[in-house]
Length: 424
Image (cartoon, rainbow, N blue to C red; front, top):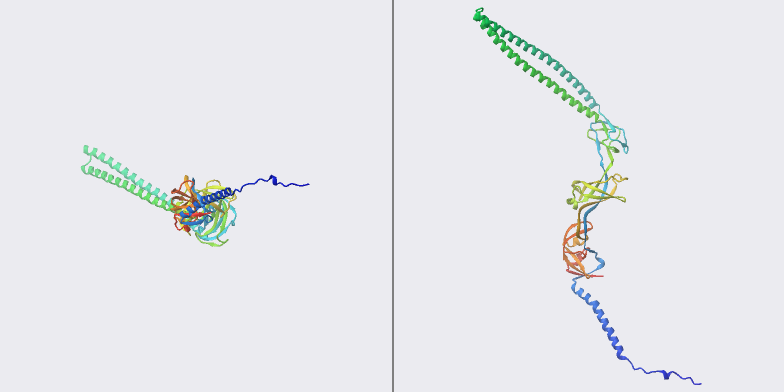
């Protein structure tokens, strides 16, 4: 049996070399066009840029519009709003009745000072006061006696005047009927004139002597009042030998030892009022001109955020810092302790709906007048005008628009180039 092949089924096909060449050419042209589309913009960017910097070395931020808050964050320290230091009012030996850390109430005696000299002086001055009071009473009685004598002398002169007047009237009637001589009549008239003069002098003497007596009595009274003031002052000093607590709180420190001799105005102990706290902060010198009493602040105590108000600013700068005090607007949080550290944020300024961008090193590099705006991986140097600055943001007044992307890192490496290519 003979097996036939498939040669009778084969069909001859002419070679297609022309189509293959066309396909190859088409692919090559498309590849060239694609390469051109990719490389031409890059070449153009290379030709436009004066410098080239890797994007990994830069930080970028977008210009946005929002609420601008200018603040300063510092570490605060809890201090007692009332923490008086008590001093010895007089010299002597001190005896404490409390120890450091004891809880005390307002008005409680904390210590006493033994001063025999002051107590003896008080007794002496009290004795002198009693003596002056007796002298005053004696002078008052003596004045009453002299006033009585002056009144009697004046009354006698008045009676004599009336008698002389009646004698002259009788003489007048008698001489009219010829009962007496003219000499007797003239004698009666002289007696009346003498009585009038004596009455006048008695009246003046009484007035002057009464004024003198009043002056002497006032002098005695002033001496008594002066001595009373002296005794009151000494009594006050003796009372101050007992040192009492001006507030309720705890005893801070005993500044001298028990039963030691102290001098006048020497600090002996302190009392801390734990019912009222304030925050003491150290603000950098750069922000001193922006601080003003009444500024709001936020204090973070653990997980709680408390509002506070700036109530005091020190007029002195120490180590490039100024000391300030904040007072809680709300009730003091529980659990606070003296000298506890808290994070404090003072709100210096707040503006709504302003153009701003993240703060960065570009401010120092461009002195706050220049920024590099990024468009298609090319940074263009642009003049800007900035306003207020905070730790996180910078207010933009002119030169940039919302949505612009700028370089916020340092630009010293750009060498003030107008355009810089950013390599991804």
